[in-house]
Image (cartoon, rainbow, N blue to C red; front, top):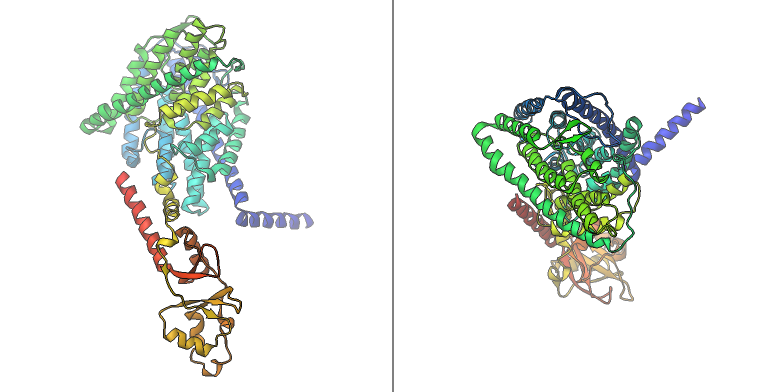
Length: 618
């Protein structure tokens, strides 16, 4: 009985803390969404790896290199049947087109990939991602990746994790703002698990939605979600990082020149990557969709990807036929870090991966652009490292490190998200040996790529987002000042000892509705509203007994240099219709009044202006 009572008390304390302590509430919600995101990531990863093993390894007879931390299915490859790939990619394209047009037609123009769909949901859809959208897109992403489509699993798992956060927000009846934060927490959980990089996943989720900002309020739930999701994922698949590589370090300041050169190369390849994607998406597949319909245009995209994949040069590894353009390509990145891919091979792969990814995702097939972007960036950086090691071996001693730096800096440029990928790389290498070159290259790429973005729904900052209209209004009100809106001039000021009879005469002879009150020593002491006086005005027996001191309420004031947001808060907190404006140097010197209606009018005009600008942008 005592134990039951203790449990009940603990539960009551828990509920009370959840309802009253905001940080505790987000901690609990972050853990919950992280647990669910982690389980979804476990299942999604298993389906992708199993499907790749069956279709690419067994049926097609292709053996793509697996990174050390990911290969979970092993066995001899089947007979070499390259035609299997275009058959499955075409079938996947047709099936995806039918599913999307039949069940989720609203997502046809949803953006670049699952990550971009999440960004769109945050800014423009109130943080809502329908469960059926995440399920269908997630399943179709599995088919795209396992059939050989050049796409990654990070975009889909980001969208699925975000959908879990959105769904939980609906279950708990959270506000639109809270739903958006939980959406980001779910996305962080998916990224932290699939990358096995909890901090990098959390930071990427909250910064990728903006070009020049990040969602600070989502840090706590995002970190908790990512940590819990990562813990669940590694319980099933181990804590080893994705890549089995030596620990790279930076020790020669002269090498920063080569890392700066890497940033320029990654910025150039990033520009090519984005331009190629948009060119193929909007100038090839959009016209095809208009003429043939969504299903057939996706089918053509799948067929094109399959043909590109099987005709692109293969590499013989120990007598086994392999292809470099299929799926995410992390195994090839590991080979590049280990120095097993020549410079010319990297050039071929950069061009081929860019084309293959643009065809796969540009046609509308489901999958992520995140992993292919890291792939192209890693190869771009590896090319610089390879050439630097060839001509300056005494300076560039670890060319494999350039692959890692290229991954982070390339993504910083194409996605305007420098911090998360940088942290991811340090988590992947399990050290901070490359921190200085990572920071330098990412900063340069960020500046060079500031005018373009891989994600179509990414906005500049919070004040450019419809999700933060209120914040934008506050920002506008902070730019307006009381001095431009108050009514200067003589103000009727009462003394504390003024009788009700005298006050009645004063009210009858002025249009003023709120009266400042001063003490005998001329100090501002309070306010009297006509609403306070009205109940006593016709009680003639009290006219000489009641004085202003008995009727006044607490004092409040603003100065001419106060902004309108400060004034607005004072009106909201007091419910006064007018507030005294005092001089800059003396709070007892009342120089005018500001009306609540004037501030509210400015507030309404600010909201209308923000909405008008938002509509023009859309």
